[in-house]
Image (cartoon, rainbow, N blue to C red; front, top):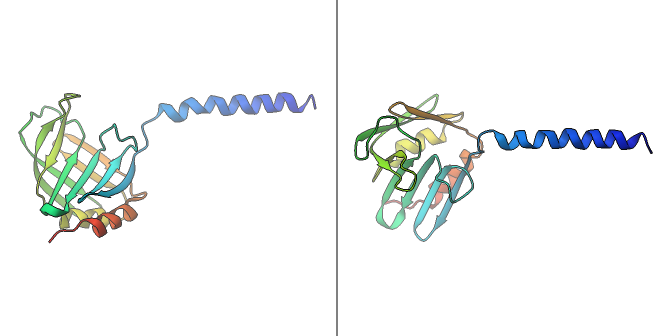
Length: 161
């Protein structure tokens, strides 16, 4: 029994030593779809609703409007500046005309586009593999894990005429 004690102790210490490393890296981002009250959203970001997702596509079914927000700081951009949001996969690309917005709470800039044509964006989102989103000098890569299911739910629940 005495021999098991030190081994167990070392195993517990080794496990505890790895725990801070798991939390020290970048935040885990996931694809999610939510529907309620005529609004359907497709987001890629943290599950914490207090934090803005990196990517959010919002479908206002009753108004036939789709809005794209990309919460990534855009170097040297000012609110209201015109901006092209480029979403691309290995097979397709969808440039979306938008403008620079500013989060009044954080002071950070982000990209936004209102009343977009969602079909070319969905074409890119349906491709397999990682996606790249670019706005000026700012860019990010988005995983494909969970994307197909979330996009499928978004398409099913986003009622546009």
